[in-house]
Amino acid sequence: MSGSDLVIVYHRQPFEEVEVDGRVEFREHKSPNGIVPTLKSFFQTVDRGSWVAWQHVDELGQEPEHPHVTMDDRHGTYEVSRIGLTPAQVASFYHVTSKAALWPVLHSFALNFDAQAADWETYREVNRLFAEAACEQASDDALIWIHDYNLWLVPSFIRQIKPDAKVAFFHHTPFPSADVFALLPWRDEIVDSLLACDIVGFHIPRYAENFVQVARSLRGAEVAEKVAVEDGLSPHGMALSEPEVTTKLRYWDREVRLDSFPIGTNPTLIRKVLGERAAGEKGFEIANELGDQQLIVSVGRVDYTKGTIETLLAYERLLERRPELHKRIKLMVTSVAPASGMTVYDETRHEIEQQVGRIHGRFATLDWGPIMLFTTPIPFEELLSYYRAADQCWITPLRDGLNLVAKEYVASKDPLEPGVLVLSEFTGCSVELPDAVIANPYSHESLDAAIDHAIDMSVEERANRMARLTASVDHYDIEHWAGHILTQFEALRSR
Ligand code: GDG
Image 1: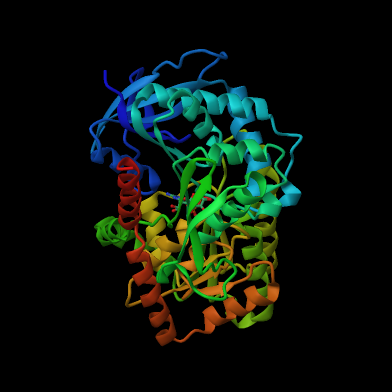
Image 2 (image 1 turned 120 degrees about the horizontal axis):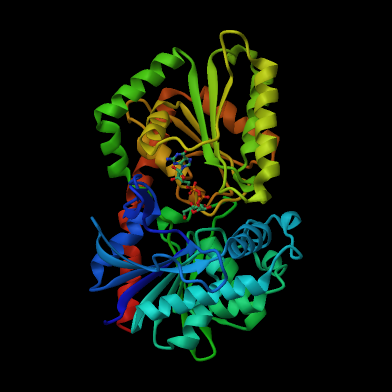
Protein backbone atom coordinates (compact mmCIF):
# COMPACT_ATOMS: atom_id res chain seq x y z
CA MET A 1 0.00 0.00 0.00
CA SER A 2 1.45 3.41 -0.94
CA GLY A 3 1.53 6.11 1.70
CA SER A 4 -0.67 9.19 1.89
CA ASP A 5 0.36 12.46 0.26
CA LEU A 6 -1.42 14.48 2.93
CA VAL A 7 -1.74 13.49 6.58
CA ILE A 8 -3.76 15.66 8.96
CA VAL A 9 -2.95 15.27 12.64
CA TYR A 10 -5.60 16.66 14.96
CA HIS A 11 -6.87 15.49 18.33
CA ARG A 12 -10.45 15.81 17.02
CA GLN A 13 -11.99 12.95 15.04
CA PRO A 14 -13.22 13.61 11.49
CA PHE A 15 -16.42 11.64 12.10
CA GLU A 16 -19.05 10.67 14.66
CA GLU A 17 -18.91 7.15 16.04
CA VAL A 18 -22.35 5.70 16.72
CA GLU A 19 -23.56 2.27 17.76
CA VAL A 20 -26.43 0.89 15.69
CA ASP A 21 -27.85 -2.53 16.67
CA GLY A 22 -24.64 -3.38 18.52
CA ARG A 23 -22.45 -2.44 15.54
CA VAL A 24 -20.16 0.60 15.42
CA GLU A 25 -20.83 2.95 12.51
CA PHE A 26 -18.78 5.96 11.44
CA ARG A 27 -20.75 8.90 10.10
CA GLU A 28 -20.00 12.36 8.92
CA HIS A 29 -20.60 14.99 11.65
CA LYS A 30 -24.22 16.13 11.69
CA SER A 31 -23.27 19.78 11.96
CA PRO A 32 -22.00 21.05 8.60
CA ASN A 33 -20.31 23.90 10.45
CA GLY A 34 -16.76 24.25 11.72
CA ILE A 35 -13.23 23.60 10.70
CA VAL A 36 -13.37 19.79 10.31
CA PRO A 37 -15.28 19.73 6.97
CA THR A 38 -12.86 22.32 5.58
CA LEU A 39 -9.82 20.31 6.61
CA LYS A 40 -11.32 17.20 5.02
CA SER A 41 -11.89 19.11 1.79
CA PHE A 42 -8.07 19.21 1.39
CA PHE A 43 -8.14 15.45 0.74
CA GLN A 44 -9.71 16.25 -2.63
CA THR A 45 -6.42 17.87 -3.65
CA VAL A 46 -4.33 14.68 -3.28
CA ASP A 47 -4.41 11.04 -4.45
CA ARG A 48 -4.47 9.61 -0.94
CA GLY A 49 -5.19 11.34 2.36
CA SER A 50 -5.14 10.26 6.00
CA TRP A 51 -6.28 11.70 9.31
CA VAL A 52 -4.67 10.75 12.63
CA ALA A 53 -6.81 10.96 15.77
CA TRP A 54 -7.14 9.01 19.03
CA GLN A 55 -9.53 6.59 20.70
CA HIS A 56 -10.00 5.50 24.31
CA VAL A 57 -8.52 2.12 25.30
CA ASP A 58 -8.49 0.44 28.74
CA GLU A 59 -4.82 -0.51 29.04
CA LEU A 60 -1.58 1.26 28.21
CA GLY A 61 -0.23 0.08 24.84
CA GLN A 62 -3.53 -1.56 23.85
CA GLU A 63 -4.57 -1.28 20.21
CA PRO A 64 -7.94 0.49 19.78
CA GLU A 65 -10.89 -1.55 18.55
CA HIS A 66 -10.99 0.17 15.18
CA PRO A 67 -7.45 1.47 14.63
CA HIS A 68 -7.89 2.01 10.89
CA VAL A 69 -11.11 3.18 9.27
CA THR A 70 -11.62 3.97 5.60
CA MET A 71 -14.12 6.81 5.37
CA ASP A 72 -16.14 7.58 2.32
CA ASP A 73 -18.17 10.76 2.62
CA ARG A 74 -18.88 13.80 0.50
CA HIS A 75 -15.19 14.75 0.81
CA GLY A 76 -14.15 11.55 -0.96
CA THR A 77 -12.31 8.56 0.44
CA TYR A 78 -9.68 8.94 3.14
CA GLU A 79 -8.05 6.85 5.84
CA VAL A 80 -8.43 7.48 9.56
CA SER A 81 -5.76 6.06 11.81
CA ARG A 82 -6.32 6.10 15.56
CA ILE A 83 -3.90 5.73 18.41
CA GLY A 84 -5.14 4.21 21.66
CA LEU A 85 -4.99 6.41 24.76
CA THR A 86 -6.04 5.35 28.25
CA PRO A 87 -8.35 7.63 30.26
CA ALA A 88 -5.33 8.46 32.47
CA GLN A 89 -3.26 9.49 29.43
CA VAL A 90 -6.10 11.66 28.08
CA ALA A 91 -6.63 13.30 31.46
CA SER A 92 -2.92 14.00 31.87
CA PHE A 93 -2.13 15.02 28.27
CA TYR A 94 -5.25 16.95 27.42
CA HIS A 95 -7.21 17.94 30.54
CA VAL A 96 -4.24 18.80 32.71
CA THR A 97 -0.98 19.49 30.85
CA SER A 98 -2.60 21.12 27.81
CA LYS A 99 -5.36 22.96 29.67
CA ALA A 100 -3.78 23.77 33.05
CA ALA A 101 -0.27 24.56 31.87
CA LEU A 102 -0.18 25.43 28.15
CA TRP A 103 -3.60 27.09 27.62
CA PRO A 104 -3.13 29.82 30.30
CA VAL A 105 0.31 30.70 28.94
CA LEU A 106 -0.95 30.85 25.35
CA HIS A 107 -3.70 33.23 26.50
CA SER A 108 -1.33 35.33 28.67
CA PHE A 109 -3.06 34.27 31.92
CA ALA A 110 0.18 33.86 33.86
CA LEU A 111 -1.61 33.51 37.21
CA ASN A 112 -3.56 30.45 36.02
CA PHE A 113 -0.36 28.69 34.89
CA ASP A 114 0.34 25.60 36.98
CA ALA A 115 3.70 24.08 35.99
CA GLN A 116 3.56 21.58 38.87
CA ALA A 117 0.26 20.07 37.64
CA ALA A 118 1.78 19.31 34.24
CA ASP A 119 3.05 15.86 33.36
CA TRP A 120 5.49 16.61 30.57
CA GLU A 121 6.63 12.98 30.19
CA THR A 122 3.09 11.87 29.27
CA TYR A 123 2.61 14.89 27.00
CA ARG A 124 5.84 14.00 25.18
CA GLU A 125 4.88 10.31 24.97
CA VAL A 126 1.42 11.06 23.53
CA ASN A 127 2.97 13.45 20.99
CA ARG A 128 5.40 10.70 19.99
CA LEU A 129 2.49 8.28 19.43
CA PHE A 130 0.73 10.81 17.19
CA ALA A 131 3.98 11.37 15.23
CA GLU A 132 4.56 7.63 14.74
CA ALA A 133 0.99 7.09 13.56
CA ALA A 134 1.33 10.02 11.13
CA CYS A 135 4.61 8.65 9.74
CA GLU A 136 3.10 5.18 9.29
CA GLN A 137 0.43 6.73 7.06
CA ALA A 138 2.67 9.14 5.16
CA SER A 139 4.66 8.64 1.96
CA ASP A 140 8.32 9.67 2.32
CA ASP A 141 7.78 13.16 0.98
CA ALA A 142 4.20 13.61 2.23
CA LEU A 143 2.88 16.81 3.67
CA ILE A 144 1.97 16.30 7.32
CA TRP A 145 -0.29 19.04 8.73
CA ILE A 146 -0.49 19.24 12.51
CA HIS A 147 -3.08 21.25 14.44
CA ASP A 148 -2.73 23.03 17.73
CA TYR A 149 -0.59 23.34 20.81
CA ASN A 150 -1.45 19.99 22.35
CA LEU A 151 0.62 18.45 19.53
CA TRP A 152 3.54 20.90 19.72
CA LEU A 153 6.21 18.18 19.89
CA VAL A 154 4.91 16.14 16.95
CA PRO A 155 7.06 17.99 14.34
CA SER A 156 10.39 17.10 15.97
CA PHE A 157 9.43 13.41 16.30
CA ILE A 158 8.37 13.38 12.62
CA ARG A 159 11.70 14.87 11.56
CA GLN A 160 13.52 12.00 13.26
CA ILE A 161 11.42 9.34 11.52
CA LYS A 162 10.76 10.91 8.11
CA PRO A 163 13.35 13.59 7.43
CA ASP A 164 12.02 14.33 3.92
CA ALA A 165 8.40 14.90 4.90
CA LYS A 166 7.05 18.44 4.60
CA VAL A 167 5.74 19.49 7.99
CA ALA A 168 3.12 22.22 8.50
CA PHE A 169 1.74 23.37 11.85
CA PHE A 170 -1.29 25.58 12.50
CA HIS A 171 -2.07 27.37 15.78
CA HIS A 172 -5.76 27.97 16.54
CA THR A 173 -4.87 29.89 19.70
CA PRO A 174 -2.96 33.12 20.24
CA PHE A 175 0.83 32.89 20.51
CA PRO A 176 1.97 34.93 23.52
CA SER A 177 4.78 37.46 23.81
CA ALA A 178 8.30 36.20 24.51
CA ASP A 179 8.09 37.30 28.17
CA VAL A 180 5.01 35.17 28.77
CA PHE A 181 6.12 32.19 26.66
CA ALA A 182 9.34 32.08 28.69
CA LEU A 183 7.29 30.92 31.71
CA LEU A 184 7.12 27.43 30.16
CA PRO A 185 9.93 25.26 31.58
CA TRP A 186 9.77 23.18 28.36
CA ARG A 187 10.14 26.23 26.11
CA ASP A 188 13.31 25.19 24.24
CA GLU A 189 11.92 21.78 23.34
CA ILE A 190 8.71 23.40 22.04
CA VAL A 191 10.48 26.04 19.96
CA ASP A 192 12.91 23.49 18.52
CA SER A 193 9.96 21.39 17.42
CA LEU A 194 8.24 24.36 15.77
CA LEU A 195 11.49 25.31 14.07
CA ALA A 196 11.64 21.77 12.65
CA CYS A 197 8.54 22.61 10.57
CA ASP A 198 8.59 23.83 6.99
CA ILE A 199 5.74 26.21 7.73
CA VAL A 200 4.19 27.45 10.98
CA GLY A 201 0.77 29.08 10.74
CA PHE A 202 -1.05 31.58 12.93
CA HIS A 203 -4.35 33.45 12.67
CA ILE A 204 -2.89 36.96 12.65
CA PRO A 205 0.44 38.77 12.19
CA ARG A 206 0.82 39.67 15.90
CA TYR A 207 1.02 36.00 16.88
CA ALA A 208 3.64 35.32 14.19
CA GLU A 209 5.69 38.28 15.42
CA ASN A 210 5.45 37.01 19.00
CA PHE A 211 6.77 33.66 17.78
CA VAL A 212 9.61 35.40 15.95
CA GLN A 213 10.67 37.13 19.19
CA VAL A 214 10.61 33.77 20.97
CA ALA A 215 12.61 32.00 18.23
CA ARG A 216 15.18 34.81 18.09
CA SER A 217 15.67 35.18 21.81
CA LEU A 218 15.66 31.53 22.80
CA ARG A 219 17.24 29.87 19.75
CA GLY A 220 18.99 32.59 17.78
CA ALA A 221 16.79 32.19 14.67
CA GLU A 222 17.10 35.07 12.19
CA VAL A 223 14.47 36.96 10.24
CA ALA A 224 14.95 36.17 6.53
CA GLU A 225 11.92 37.96 5.08
CA LYS A 226 9.43 40.48 6.37
CA VAL A 227 6.58 42.06 4.39
CA ALA A 228 3.84 44.66 4.87
CA VAL A 229 0.59 43.19 6.18
CA GLU A 230 -2.22 43.23 3.60
CA ASP A 231 -4.75 46.05 3.96
CA GLY A 232 -7.70 44.04 5.27
CA LEU A 233 -5.66 42.76 8.23
CA SER A 234 -3.73 45.84 9.31
CA PRO A 235 -5.87 48.46 11.00
CA HIS A 236 -3.87 51.07 12.90
CA GLY A 237 -3.98 51.80 16.58
CA MET A 238 -5.67 48.62 17.87
CA ALA A 239 -4.32 46.30 20.57
CA LEU A 240 -3.32 43.61 18.05
CA SER A 241 -2.35 45.89 15.12
CA GLU A 242 0.85 44.86 13.37
CA PRO A 243 1.93 46.73 10.22
CA GLU A 244 4.61 44.25 9.08
CA VAL A 245 4.97 40.52 9.43
CA THR A 246 7.81 38.04 9.15
CA THR A 247 7.26 35.37 6.51
CA LYS A 248 10.59 33.50 6.69
CA LEU A 249 13.00 32.61 9.48
CA ARG A 250 16.46 31.13 9.05
CA TYR A 251 17.59 28.64 11.68
CA TRP A 252 20.94 26.89 11.09
CA ASP A 253 20.64 25.54 7.53
CA ARG A 254 16.84 25.51 7.57
CA GLU A 255 14.30 27.97 6.23
CA VAL A 256 11.05 28.09 8.18
CA ARG A 257 8.12 29.86 6.57
CA LEU A 258 5.63 31.70 8.76
CA ASP A 259 2.08 32.24 7.67
CA SER A 260 -0.52 34.53 9.25
CA PHE A 261 -3.99 34.16 7.85
CA PRO A 262 -7.31 34.04 9.74
CA ILE A 263 -9.67 31.09 9.37
CA GLY A 264 -13.02 32.14 7.99
CA THR A 265 -16.57 31.08 8.46
CA ASN A 266 -18.88 29.84 5.70
CA PRO A 267 -21.31 32.70 4.87
CA THR A 268 -22.77 30.83 1.89
CA LEU A 269 -23.73 27.88 4.05
CA ILE A 270 -25.03 30.15 6.82
CA ARG A 271 -27.27 32.08 4.42
CA LYS A 272 -28.47 28.86 2.81
CA VAL A 273 -29.51 27.43 6.20
CA LEU A 274 -31.19 30.71 7.12
CA GLY A 275 -33.09 30.67 3.83
CA GLU A 276 -34.67 27.31 4.64
CA ARG A 277 -38.16 26.90 5.99
CA ALA A 278 -37.09 25.53 9.40
CA ALA A 279 -35.04 28.68 10.04
CA GLY A 280 -37.98 30.85 9.00
CA GLU A 281 -40.19 29.04 11.51
CA LYS A 282 -37.60 29.31 14.28
CA GLY A 283 -37.15 33.01 13.51
CA PHE A 284 -40.89 33.53 13.76
CA GLU A 285 -40.99 31.69 17.10
CA ILE A 286 -38.11 33.78 18.50
CA ALA A 287 -39.72 37.04 17.31
CA ASN A 288 -43.01 36.03 18.95
CA GLU A 289 -41.35 35.24 22.25
CA LEU A 290 -39.33 38.45 22.25
CA GLY A 291 -42.21 40.78 21.41
CA ASP A 292 -40.70 44.27 21.35
CA GLN A 293 -37.68 43.38 23.49
CA GLN A 294 -34.22 43.75 21.94
CA LEU A 295 -32.11 40.58 21.93
CA ILE A 296 -28.40 40.60 22.78
CA VAL A 297 -26.50 37.35 22.20
CA SER A 298 -23.21 36.26 23.72
CA VAL A 299 -22.02 32.81 22.60
CA GLY A 300 -18.97 30.84 23.73
CA ARG A 301 -17.55 27.86 25.60
CA VAL A 302 -17.07 27.81 29.38
CA ASP A 303 -13.58 29.28 29.61
CA TYR A 304 -12.10 32.04 31.73
CA THR A 305 -10.49 33.46 28.56
CA LYS A 306 -13.87 34.01 26.87
CA GLY A 307 -14.89 36.97 29.05
CA THR A 308 -18.37 35.66 29.92
CA ILE A 309 -18.17 37.08 33.45
CA GLU A 310 -17.13 40.44 31.97
CA THR A 311 -20.21 40.33 29.69
CA LEU A 312 -22.51 39.52 32.61
CA LEU A 313 -21.14 42.28 34.84
CA ALA A 314 -21.31 44.79 31.97
CA TYR A 315 -24.97 43.83 31.47
CA GLU A 316 -25.64 44.33 35.17
CA ARG A 317 -24.04 47.78 35.03
CA LEU A 318 -26.19 48.57 31.98
CA LEU A 319 -29.38 47.63 33.82
CA GLU A 320 -28.27 49.77 36.79
CA ARG A 321 -27.26 52.72 34.62
CA ARG A 322 -30.26 52.74 32.31
CA PRO A 323 -33.42 51.58 34.10
CA GLU A 324 -35.46 52.68 31.08
CA LEU A 325 -34.15 49.56 29.32
CA HIS A 326 -35.76 47.20 31.82
CA LYS A 327 -38.30 44.95 30.07
CA ARG A 328 -37.00 46.21 26.73
CA ILE A 329 -33.85 44.06 26.42
CA LYS A 330 -32.83 40.48 27.01
CA LEU A 331 -29.36 38.91 27.14
CA MET A 332 -28.97 35.36 25.86
CA VAL A 333 -25.72 33.80 27.07
CA THR A 334 -24.59 30.40 25.84
CA SER A 335 -21.69 28.88 27.70
CA VAL A 336 -21.34 25.26 26.78
CA ALA A 337 -19.58 23.09 29.34
CA PRO A 338 -16.34 21.32 28.36
CA ALA A 339 -15.90 17.54 28.18
CA SER A 340 -16.57 15.78 31.47
CA GLY A 341 -13.50 15.32 33.63
CA MET A 342 -12.07 18.72 32.80
CA THR A 343 -11.97 20.26 36.25
CA VAL A 344 -9.97 23.36 35.28
CA TYR A 345 -13.19 25.03 34.16
CA ASP A 346 -15.33 24.09 37.19
CA GLU A 347 -14.74 27.39 38.93
CA THR A 348 -15.60 29.45 35.83
CA ARG A 349 -18.77 27.43 35.22
CA HIS A 350 -19.92 27.88 38.81
CA GLU A 351 -19.18 31.58 38.68
CA ILE A 352 -21.12 32.05 35.43
CA GLU A 353 -24.12 30.21 36.87
CA GLN A 354 -23.90 32.13 40.12
CA GLN A 355 -23.66 35.54 38.41
CA VAL A 356 -26.54 34.77 36.04
CA GLY A 357 -28.71 33.73 39.00
CA ARG A 358 -27.75 36.80 41.00
CA ILE A 359 -28.33 39.32 38.19
CA HIS A 360 -31.55 37.64 37.14
CA GLY A 361 -32.78 37.60 40.74
CA ARG A 362 -31.90 41.26 41.15
CA PHE A 363 -33.80 42.58 38.12
CA ALA A 364 -36.37 39.95 37.05
CA THR A 365 -40.08 40.65 37.34
CA LEU A 366 -43.02 38.35 36.89
CA ASP A 367 -43.32 39.33 33.24
CA TRP A 368 -39.63 39.84 32.36
CA GLY A 369 -36.52 37.68 32.54
CA PRO A 370 -33.45 39.81 31.80
CA ILE A 371 -31.09 36.86 31.10
CA MET A 372 -31.27 33.39 29.55
CA LEU A 373 -28.35 31.01 30.06
CA PHE A 374 -27.86 27.94 27.83
CA THR A 375 -25.30 25.42 29.07
CA THR A 376 -25.88 22.66 26.52
CA PRO A 377 -25.19 23.10 22.81
CA ILE A 378 -27.95 24.56 20.67
CA PRO A 379 -28.26 22.89 17.23
CA PHE A 380 -26.25 24.96 14.75
CA GLU A 381 -29.28 25.74 12.57
CA GLU A 382 -31.12 27.19 15.60
CA LEU A 383 -28.09 29.12 16.76
CA LEU A 384 -28.10 30.88 13.38
CA SER A 385 -31.73 31.91 13.88
CA TYR A 386 -30.82 33.45 17.24
CA TYR A 387 -27.92 35.33 15.63
CA ARG A 388 -30.22 36.64 12.92
CA ALA A 389 -32.82 37.76 15.45
CA ALA A 390 -30.26 39.44 17.71
CA ASP A 391 -30.02 43.23 17.65
CA GLN A 392 -26.59 42.99 19.19
CA CYS A 393 -23.82 40.45 19.71
CA TRP A 394 -21.31 40.97 22.53
CA ILE A 395 -17.99 39.17 22.16
CA THR A 396 -15.80 40.15 25.10
CA PRO A 397 -12.93 37.64 25.50
CA LEU A 398 -9.92 38.71 27.53
CA ARG A 399 -7.90 36.81 24.92
CA ASP A 400 -9.03 34.66 21.97
CA GLY A 401 -7.08 33.21 19.04
CA LEU A 402 -9.63 34.38 16.50
CA ASN A 403 -13.32 33.92 17.52
CA LEU A 404 -15.54 32.49 14.84
CA VAL A 405 -18.77 33.46 16.61
CA ALA A 406 -18.23 37.13 15.72
CA LYS A 407 -17.95 36.21 12.05
CA GLU A 408 -20.95 33.86 12.19
CA TYR A 409 -23.06 36.65 13.71
CA VAL A 410 -22.12 39.06 10.93
CA ALA A 411 -22.79 36.45 8.23
CA SER A 412 -26.22 35.69 9.74
CA LYS A 413 -27.61 39.21 9.74
CA ASP A 414 -30.13 40.36 7.17
CA PRO A 415 -28.79 43.59 5.56
CA LEU A 416 -32.27 45.08 5.97
CA GLU A 417 -32.11 44.56 9.73
CA PRO A 418 -28.49 45.31 10.61
CA GLY A 419 -27.24 44.47 14.08
CA VAL A 420 -24.30 45.72 16.11
CA LEU A 421 -21.21 43.74 17.03
CA VAL A 422 -19.43 44.74 20.25
CA LEU A 423 -15.99 43.15 20.03
CA SER A 424 -13.05 42.80 22.38
CA GLU A 425 -9.83 44.15 20.91
CA PHE A 426 -8.08 41.04 22.29
CA THR A 427 -9.78 38.65 19.86
CA GLY A 428 -7.73 37.81 16.76
CA CYS A 429 -10.65 38.68 14.48
CA SER A 430 -10.66 42.28 15.75
CA VAL A 431 -7.95 43.13 13.20
CA GLU A 432 -10.29 42.00 10.40
CA LEU A 433 -13.34 43.69 11.90
CA PRO A 434 -12.39 47.21 13.00
CA ASP A 435 -15.94 48.32 12.11
CA ALA A 436 -17.30 46.50 15.13
CA VAL A 437 -17.65 48.62 18.26
CA ILE A 438 -14.23 47.78 19.66
CA ALA A 439 -13.79 47.59 23.44
CA ASN A 440 -11.18 46.76 26.04
CA PRO A 441 -12.95 44.18 28.28
CA TYR A 442 -10.51 44.85 31.14
CA SER A 443 -11.91 48.39 31.46
CA HIS A 444 -15.46 48.98 32.72
CA GLU A 445 -15.35 52.43 31.22
CA SER A 446 -14.39 51.14 27.76
CA LEU A 447 -16.90 48.29 27.75
CA ASP A 448 -19.74 50.45 29.09
CA ALA A 449 -19.05 53.15 26.51
CA ALA A 450 -19.05 50.55 23.71
CA ILE A 451 -22.35 49.09 24.92
CA ASP A 452 -23.99 52.51 25.22
CA HIS A 453 -22.74 53.33 21.72
CA ALA A 454 -24.20 50.07 20.42
CA ILE A 455 -27.57 50.68 22.05
CA ASP A 456 -27.85 54.29 20.91
CA MET A 457 -26.47 53.72 17.40
CA SER A 458 -28.52 55.19 14.57
CA VAL A 459 -29.95 52.84 11.95
CA GLU A 460 -27.74 54.47 9.35
CA GLU A 461 -24.52 53.91 11.31
CA ARG A 462 -25.56 50.34 12.04
CA ALA A 463 -26.17 49.66 8.35
CA ASN A 464 -22.86 51.24 7.30
CA ARG A 465 -20.82 49.37 9.86
CA MET A 466 -22.57 46.08 9.15
CA ALA A 467 -22.03 46.47 5.39
CA ARG A 468 -18.28 46.85 5.96
CA LEU A 469 -18.20 43.96 8.44
CA THR A 470 -20.08 41.75 5.99
CA ALA A 471 -17.66 42.62 3.20
CA SER A 472 -14.75 41.54 5.40
CA VAL A 473 -16.41 38.32 6.61
CA ASP A 474 -17.34 37.43 3.02
CA HIS A 475 -13.83 38.17 1.78
CA TYR A 476 -11.94 36.29 4.54
CA ASP A 477 -14.28 33.32 4.37
CA ILE A 478 -13.37 29.67 4.80
CA GLU A 479 -12.82 29.15 1.06
CA HIS A 480 -10.38 32.04 0.96
CA TRP A 481 -8.47 30.53 3.88
CA ALA A 482 -8.42 27.08 2.25
CA GLY A 483 -7.25 28.61 -1.07
CA HIS A 484 -4.51 30.55 0.72
CA ILE A 485 -3.29 27.46 2.60
CA LEU A 486 -3.33 25.41 -0.60
CA THR A 487 -1.11 27.97 -2.33
CA GLN A 488 1.31 27.78 0.59
CA PHE A 489 1.33 23.98 0.39
CA GLU A 490 1.93 24.01 -3.37
CA ALA A 491 4.90 26.31 -2.85
CA LEU A 492 6.26 23.91 -0.22
CA ARG A 493 5.84 20.89 -2.46
CA SER A 494 7.67 22.54 -5.33
CA ARG A 495 10.65 23.50 -3.13
C1 GDG B 1 -10.53 27.75 18.97
C2 GDG B 1 -9.90 29.09 19.40
C3 GDG B 1 -10.47 30.02 17.17
C4 GDG B 1 -20.66 27.66 20.28
N1 GDG B 1 -21.76 27.39 21.02
C5 GDG B 1 -22.52 26.56 20.27
C6 GDG B 1 -21.86 26.33 19.06
N2 GDG B 1 -20.73 27.01 19.10
C7 GDG B 1 -19.78 27.05 17.98
C8 GDG B 1 -19.75 28.42 17.36
C9 GDG B 1 -18.37 28.45 16.72
C10 GDG B 1 -17.56 27.53 17.63
O1 GDG B 1 -18.47 26.80 18.44
C11 GDG B 1 -16.66 28.33 18.58
O2 GDG B 1 -15.62 28.84 17.84
P1 GDG B 1 -14.64 29.95 18.42
O3 GDG B 1 -13.76 30.38 17.31
O4 GDG B 1 -15.44 31.07 18.96
O5 GDG B 1 -13.88 29.32 19.66
P2 GDG B 1 -13.06 28.00 20.19
O6 GDG B 1 -13.94 26.85 20.36
O7 GDG B 1 -12.41 28.51 21.43
O8 GDG B 1 -11.95 27.65 19.11
C12 GDG B 1 -10.57 30.24 18.69
C13 GDG B 1 -10.96 28.64 16.77
O9 GDG B 1 -10.29 27.62 17.53
C14 GDG B 1 -10.73 28.36 15.27
O10 GDG B 1 -9.36 28.36 14.95
O11 GDG B 1 -11.30 31.00 16.53
O12 GDG B 1 -9.94 31.45 19.04
O13 GDG B 1 -10.01 29.25 20.83
O14 GDG B 1 -18.39 27.91 15.43
O15 GDG B 1 -20.81 28.54 16.45
N3 GDG B 1 -22.36 25.54 18.08
C15 GDG B 1 -23.57 24.95 18.31
N4 GDG B 1 -24.25 25.14 19.48
C16 GDG B 1 -23.78 25.92 20.48
O16 GDG B 1 -24.43 26.08 21.52
N5 GDG B 1 -24.10 24.17 17.36
